[in-house]
Each structure stands twice: as C-alpha cells, then as structure tokens.
Image (cartoon, rainbow, N blue to C red):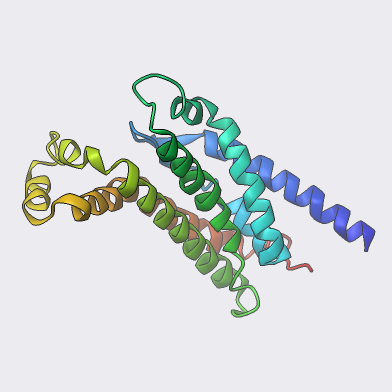
Length: 213
C-alpha cells in the first residue's frame, strides 16, 4: 500500500512537471492573455484518469498554483500600479476564476474512466469535458472583468465584417459575454480539439492509460 501511494506521488509529480513545462511553450499567444500550448493540460487529465477524480482535482489544484507561479508577472500586474492594474475585487476574481477554478476543473478529466471501457475514448472525452469546463471559467472571468474591451476588440482590423454584425446584434452584458466567448475561444477551442486528439492516441498506450486506485 505504501509503495502504491509513493508511486502515485512520484508519477503525479512528474506529470505535473511536464504539464508546467508544456504550458510555458505556447505555439500561439494572444496579446491579452491565453494561448495554444503543446497539450499542457493532458498530463493532468492522465493523472485524473489513472487515480480517480478526487486525486485528479487535488493534482489539478496544485497545477493551478504552479500556473500562478509561472505566470507571476501577469498575476502581479493585476495588483500593482500600471496599465494592467485592476480594482482589488476584479484582480481577486480573475485570479480565482482564471487560475484556481479554470485549472482545477481539469482534474475532472477522469470522469469517464469507469463509464467507458475503451481507454482511448474515455481519456479523449474526459479531456474534452475538462477543458471545456476550463473554457467556461475563462468565459465568465472575461465577461465580468474584461468585457469593457469588447467594442474596441470587434472594431479592430480583421474583424470588420463579423465585428460589425456582432456590434449591431449585441450590447451591454450580452456583448461582453460574446466577446469573452470569442476571445477565449480563439485559443481554447483549438486547445480542446488538439488535446482530445492526442488523448485518444495516448489512450492506446496501456502503461499511460493504466487505472489505479
């Protein structure tokens, strides 16, 4: 039993380290935060699949703290004087939703491990589900705090056609929500698709998709 717990800690620590490194490597980065990574959330999904939801949520929470550490410059800018400084409640809300809630939600990536017999499919659907929850957390944060940028965003070059249609169809809170869905979708939707594909492939490797209590 002790060896099993030790092995779980070692494997989880290694996968969290891999996830942290992969999150730093962004193949596409947006100017106001967010970017497409090399499936950086997949290692946490694997933890959740191997060891269950409770352990997955704990590991994902630790991962969220690591994300805050690696993104310390961005996080600190919310609180310190400067162009990115937010009102205190906004800074705390962004920190909570964009880091704690968003990344901890990835710990639900193992919800299908005992519901779907095919490991590849279970891991793939779990990854899609978990990252979609992360996407929702970013949408809420963006709509509440950063929705003020909606009009500016949709009037930028490259958004003239769709931007004008959106501006004519939405206003106020609804425009903020549409903006957040659109902006966060620019990186989260490709991230979800890419992670789901790789998860399906990885799930075919018995050693990786092995379940443990």
